[in-house]
Image (tube, rainbow over all chains, first blue to last red; front, side, top):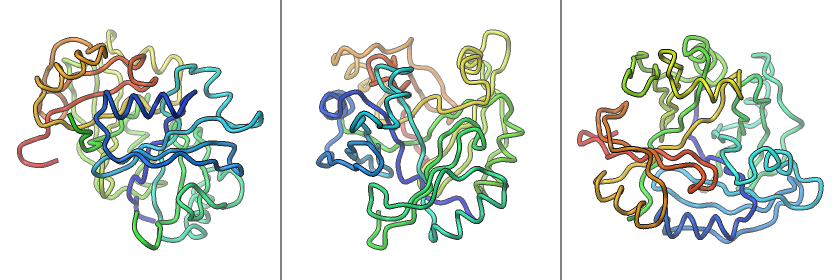
Length: 139
Length: 139
């Protein structure tokens, strides 16, 4: 497997609304998507475009959201994960497992509508790593 | 100011040598630069290329390295900062200061040989943010 595009950096936030203001006003972002719920992941999501990659703002959705623990440690938010693209999600899963990296659960639909999985940060130099199948219609 | 390219994601590591093995063997990176010292910043640096952005591996250099504190909290390493490009470093500094974001110190030479500064994570949604002037010869 060859290292693919860095699709996005996941940034946890206690408030997507406040983060949108920050990215628009202070960072100068001009392309910010509409926030939407991703109930299966327990997050609300909003993509901010940079010229070459995206920032994925993620806010907890529901009491069981996996983001609550992160925000308890980082109340103001912070960098949560890195997401790389692969051409084939099942091949990628087999690759990481063969390397001894712990794949967290089965591939499932992600925020871009293609299949994704996460790899345990302890096997990835402390970086929670999302692997996503490249969207057929681009990025 | 308009949000620029995400030049790189800074990833702290206790060992660049071990991280290079991880990125090459497990992540499939094929373009990994030579590690080099950046004494002014107190870090050893190594760039890993993805097709659209870079991962900047940073390891402490010297007892006063600013990375020691991060690694004390995250012994296995982890995401440390995000770096965005701007056309003019002084204009960018004035912009962030006008927005009330705390610029940490004066612009100085960064790992790509152009001027950089950092913005306080508390003013950037918990993300330590590096701003760098775009290299004249590209990225």
